[in-house]
Figure 1: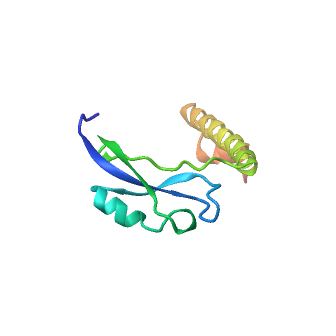
Figure 2: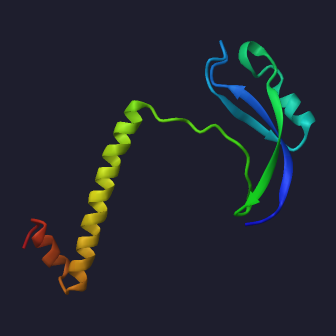
Length: 119
């Protein structure tokens, strides 16, 4: 990890531009305060100007990092992710079993026959 850091300016907006009941997120990350002020002009709730904050951005893995809005999952997303995790775990277990079978000398045809494919 690098010790390189630089000062940047974050332009904050809101996901609900009507009443401001949403979440704040980084609309822009700028190198200068003047750019941030210009980019945030009229971009906030009810056409107001965005809040601008100074941020120290670290240089990690070849890129400058800055804050962002992490979208939280909905109840439906959580349920879908649980199904995806189960499917992914089944696939990993199946792939591991096939790899073990190949190490024991079974051919692709043998494995296909075990899975119910053509003999």
